[in-house]
Length: 190
Image (tube, rainbow, N blue to C red):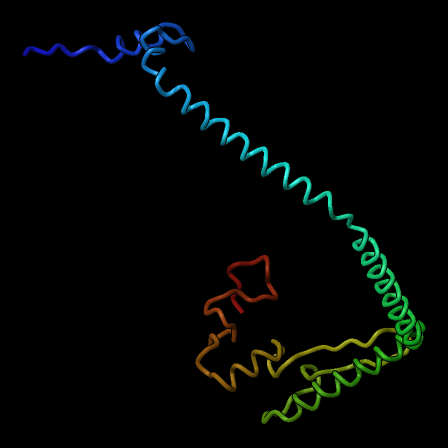
């Protein structure tokens, strides 16, 4: 028995000679399944339409009238809470002079605390590098920080607590870093 194989492309052309058209052989091959396929398609389509219809009817039954009442009550509660908050805040409003006085007293207290902290350090601190607070009524309070070497509080603290961390020549955290007072000059020789 010598079988000859047919090219699949030629076989496909025999079933559908034109795009979308069926050949008489394809119609004969599909004929036994026509009724079963039609019944299956009708059942699937009617199931989809039934689910859609049921969903629409279930949503139409709810009138959502209670949501409007809940939203109105919530908006009213928020409005009352906001009015209460505004009433409480209006009782604690300071005038410009009162606010300035409170800020100056707070700055003096912070400066006093910093001065007492720096005075409690073991080494004596000279006047130019200690913490100073200028207290005048015409200008805001300013605080200047310093240490023994005039390089800041951190340098003094680090030098006492961790002696090997700072560069021994310039007392900087980054070894070999240029002096910050000569920012534009990379090769400062201080």
